[in-house]
Length: 269
Image 1 (cartoon, rainbow, N blue to C red):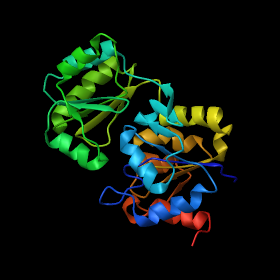
Image 2: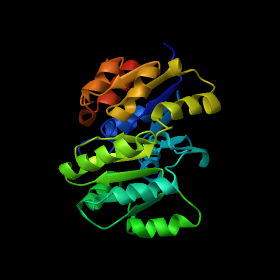
Image 3: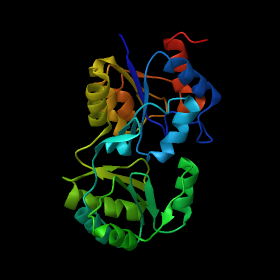
Image 4: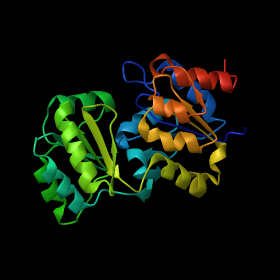
């Protein structure tokens, strides 16, 4: 199989226990970058990905942010898909339990308060938000009808389950609802996915078919991508459903599973 592009998820796939790229992972990608383009693809915002690009030395390569909602090539926006403004208002009204809702657009992150959820996301992504209530953000965006590339809903598991059911019942036809944990929901536009973004980039940037792509992932939002590309690889800590569709399961993310696979596959020392 001739591989001409590498794409990889970040959280749960590339990072070690300190939520960082290990020296081994950096070295493996640096060995690879002269041979193949490497595209990071994540639910993160661009600024939470760019420092990882810089560590690897691939800052000149595309970024796929927000699970495919925003594609940047040469620093320019090539495709952008948001949750529409009126739908944001409706989602906000459903939040009767006062769960943490963070709104994201491009490199803007608006968190409603500096709470444990905000602090956890800062630690995970190395990015700081602007503190504004959901109502303040909606007021700020009202004139331009600005939408959100992503909403992060966080809180106690019972309340999150309740709003998940409401969102699915009322707006399921418009939204992707990803649940990486019982206390989290990542909310994104229905029409996008990591697969749709990879398809766009493969065609428009690299003139490749999907069978020439190798990719790594761990979670539900990686399933479509991994089963559709030439070599879809699940880390050992991936959800069972991800392992089921992947072509192969490799080592654990926190134990340099991706780096070890790359070093073996491409015969790096």
